[in-house]
Amino acid sequence: MDRRKTLGALAPGQLNARQSLAPGGKAAGKLPLDKALSRMSLAGPVARRSSAYTTKASGVKQDPRPTSDKGFQQACIRTVITYLAAHGFEYAITPKVLASPTTKDFTNVMMFLFRQFDPVLPKTFKLEEEVPQLYKRLKYPFQISKSNLTAVGSPHTWPSLLAALTWLVELLNYAERAEQARQDVQDERSRTEAEFFQYVSQVYRFFMTGDDAKCEEVDGRQAAEFEARAAGIRSDIERLAASNDALRSEIERLWGEPSPLLAARTAKEETLADKEKFLKLLDNLQAHKTSLQRKLAERQADVAAQAAELAAVEKENEQLRARIAVQTVHPADVMRMNQEKAKLESALRSTQAQREGLDRRVLEQERSIEARLDSVEAALQGYHSMADRLALIPATAKRAEGVNFEVRLDRGAASAGEMINVDLKGIVKPALQRLRDSYSAKARELADQLLSLQEKHDSVRELLAEREEENRNAEAQVHKLDGQYRSAKEALDQDIAAAQSQVDQLAAEVAQLRNANGTLVLASEERLRALQAQYEDLLGQCELDNATLHRDLSAALEKILNHKVQLQADLKALCGREAGIMQQLQQEAAKLSALPG
Image (cartoon, rainbow, N blue to C red; front, side, top):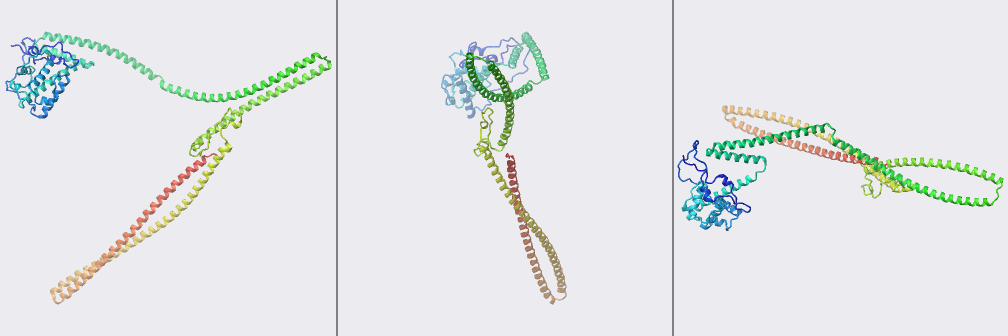
């Protein structure tokens, strides 16, 4: 068996490993195009395998592409120009040039494209000889004749050459994308798929060459690699399982423990409550500190005054001692001085007791004042809450009218008049009284309006009752007229039936008389015409009366219905107005009841 050639003139590995001449590309390590295209397969004779398929001899294969279509040609031109522009084609190229190129233009494009396969392609390039051979080696499925290459730009040869040029560009694009896909393999799955594809390619190549030893070697190497990778994956799985077990036990432990978020929220709420308490305590302590500082200043002033008084007394004592030292003391004077000393000591003890009692009273008064101030603050909180609901604070509120109703208590004030920031008796109370009087007057006006509306409502109800009575009377009259109409219609129907029977009887008599005596025919016919005329007059009068009765009855019913609809609309509007006024009165009454007495 002859040596078998490869499936293509260029092996797929060589096509996919092509390096582009674009900026940044590498061109080293490639065979020249003439050697690459003429290289035969390295495989030896295949003795044990033969292809199950055989090719039939056939004529020239026809190109199924619409090469003569203008749209197809424009698409091919855009594809070729896009590739040439992206890969640094050194010559000027435009759609107009590719629409009808010269031999030089076609040669430049072909040389550039084939150099993408073989960068060391020789410059001596015979178009008519090399291009068909190169396309044949590349397994181009259609034939390119030398005669077509002698007149490249002619209308009957250029469409097929343009299609071949586009096929070559698409082949180069595929090679670039395959190389890029091979370089972009980053994740484990894509890397594994690429390695497996490479393994299958190697095994298939050895299988096609009949080298079973190489196939088994590649299979063993791939199996060992898979086993090593599987061992690594198993170790990773065991490690991850242990980590998952540890995390699961940690999660179960955390689920079993109280929620730290709930504990943190509880601690936060307690901390905020303690903060509010401490802030209030700080405010109270600050006020108490101010009061104590004021008292300390008063006590220090008292101490300074007493120290000055003591100094004066000591000075006076020194003077008295000096006088006593120069005087002779008699026993009577000593007794008198001892008595005065005892009296003074008794007075001092009495004064100290009075002072201690006064201190106790002052302390009790301070405690009583603090309690009263606390009650005043509580009352002020209720007052401010009520004033806020009544829109009295701040001074720019709806009902404040520019008056500052907000009362602030200063515990550290020096006097009672300075403890309140506003004049309660002169400003706040008169303003509240004016506001109360205003709303009382408005309430009285609304009550008067309500009474007036109630009277109107009663009168409308009476009027409605009268209209309903009139409506019932009209309906009774309608029923009565309807009965009269029916009775009149029945009587008229009876008269018509009697007249009809009389006419029939006369017609029968006329027929008998016409047969019996011809002289009576004219008289009978005359009487018949008279009766028919009377019948028609009676029928017309009945129809006229019927139409008049129907018209009068319809007009009466329409007036009654219109009157009823108008009464219902008036009553509904009045009820809605009454409900709105009642709601407004209730709101004003609630606001008035919320005002302080």
